[in-house]
Length: 418
Image (cartoon, rainbow, N blue to C red):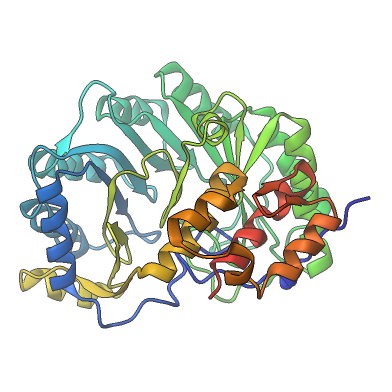
């Protein structure tokens, strides 16, 4: 029997992402500001790099002032980028009324080279309680071709409410299939105090039966930003939480889903799975991506941009965000610039996460180092994982074995930690 390495044994990543796929901001500092982002945008324009846009819509209903500020940011950022830079990827984070989506998509098309006729990879989040078939059809007309459906079982107004009826989600999946969306993803949270292993098992089984293309497993302690913040929500015991996570891995594996990493599962014919198998998957501040070659531009409160070597975050305070844009400035509040050592650790961590293997000798040639010496602090841990059958380790190669795929996030975190 293979040993399961507990989360606490692996150091926490201090790079772009943490173990839950959220952007890790501990390297961010206030020394990065709007001028740094403007220079980075100018460099992107000069190099004519393709773009990936990530627009953040708040979980709580936004004010009209926020809508105006977001439109201002789109105009301002667009002024500093070139019209020939294609928007290969667009992700709308957070469910929004269709009227707002239509208005902001018009603003985006005015300032950016938004692709037509389904040539882009454009996704949007949906709330099944507020989305019908007509809305899904309108979203397809606006150019979206991927959807992520939030499972409504973690509501602030009714914390005891549990997910029991899959019909609304089934309806949205049917609508997405009918309107020829490329993929459908659903979210699956675990670890809340009101959950039991039995209720989680029922929820998991009902979602698997709906056969989404992708499924995102996340801990309610740190939910995706598209969910309403619940700072005082109690968590269940660690034993129950571990059992839920273990159950999810077992049932999803049995149902034919591949674990990509960072809580992301995908079917064997999904683009993410195929890209990982072919060594074409990338990892950015937003998670796994098919568009690592792009400059990633974040729009909205708290959004993060990743432009060449610069990572920068917008203010998460609406007043500061609006004030900066009202003064004609970008709302950047913090960030960091990747240095040589960061690039090495992130390269190793990203390729392990995306390819599940690493050519050690290629890394040594590229960076002029001895791999085992550079990573001497974690080498004993790697040797232990090798003995446990989780990885295959040699002087030339590191490969994540099937038994170690559930621990791949911890492995990458160990390499990313300075």
